[in-house]
Amino acid sequence: MSNAGLEHLIRFYAILDALERNTGGARRLNDCSRQMCWPKRGVYFFRETGEKRSDTGEGPRIVRVGTHALKAGGGTTQWNRLSAHRGQLRSGGGNHRGSIFRLIVGTALIKRDALRFPTWDGGNSADKEIRAAELELERAVSQVIRCMPFLWLAIEVEAGPVSMRGRIERNSIALLSNFNKQPLDAPSTEWLGQYSDRERVRMSGLWNQNHVDEEYEHGFLDKFEELAEQMGKP
Image (cartoon, rainbow, N blue to C red; front, top):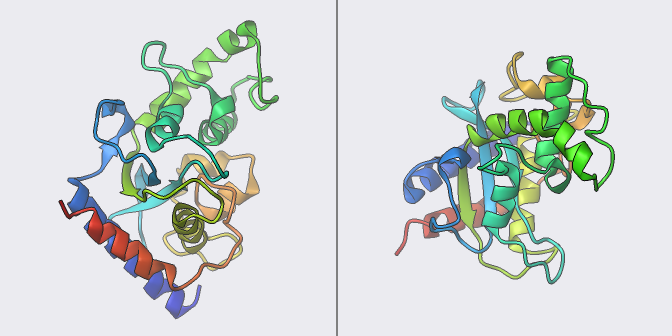
């Protein structure tokens, strides 16, 4: 990454620091519920225990960026998306067919721990017997994701592929990604994503696949900073 890229990444994390102050700190899905005060729409930024920045300063690095409702007319809310990643509190399980985040974390666990779940990446639907057979792994995925601290940024705009939420998500991923670049804030050798069967996850250092090979717009940081500052206003 160029010197400009390093400077932009340092600025990105400075904005996240301000966002964390303005929102009262990171949360974990273990401690979250629908009853908490959530924006209808936004972007979220996950961290992971043990994953530290090494080139842009001190502190945790971001391991996943996400949003929701990027199709015109989409009605998914931010909490809908986060709860899909969290899974079901009663059973401890979840539905990896409704969360790509859960899916790719699960495939990494399968490889790391030499597990056998042949139906895990087998389509968008499954009957009751298959889901029951996958419950043990769904629970393991829930334990991983629910412990990840995350920050969120409210962006109350209409659903659509060219929304500001889409712009912030896309450019944040492109900036953070190490895919086909000289790594900055490289993942640790113990990072679970090192066991992913998806090259884009392993090479980017992110639990993301889309946008990891794209260039980012330098100007998006100005809007990102403006939105983060608004989170601290009544």
